[in-house]
Amino acid sequence: MEETLAFLFETIPGMGILIGSVFVISFIVCIIMERKTKKTFVERATTEDDWEYFEEAENPENEEK
Image 1 (cartoon, rainbow, N blue to C red):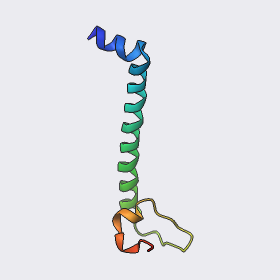
Image 2 (image 1 turned 90 degrees about the vertical axis):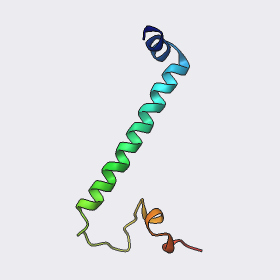
Image 3 (image 1 turned 60 degrees about the vertical axis):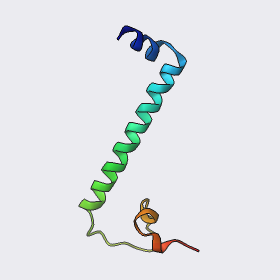
Image 4 (image 1 turned 180 degrees about the vertical axis):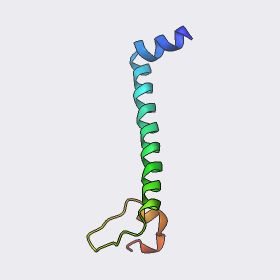
């Protein structure tokens, strides 16, 4: 256990692993929260100026050709 902690906190690759894992975990949490928020506020009216982050993934027929 002591070698693992020394690797993670005392070496450059270990710090990279820590920063990379925090980035990946926060990105996954953000996507989950965005989807839950989208399900909660479905009654909001959309306008022409609105854009949607997940539009291409959920509606592939709307892709420009």
